[in-house]
Image 1: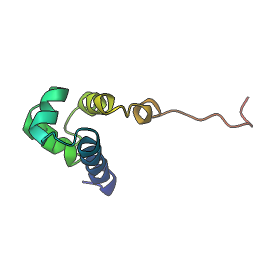
Image 2: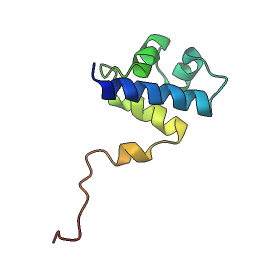
Image 3: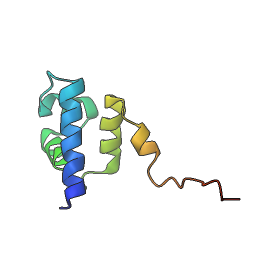
Image 4: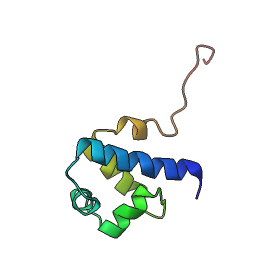
Length: 80
């Protein structure tokens, strides 16, 4: 697994602990509609979990802006 994916999982874990400090993995998993085992994979950055589950977690955490920027091509001042 790449370092970026591990970092993604770590950031998810940190965000959960920040915004829902009393939630365990199990509790947060219920909030986003996945099993604890699936959520544990997410905190490891496992992309065998569908992206919609990561999207659901980002939505609940109020962190959707990053998802909305995926694959967005920025126009430069030189573009027509």
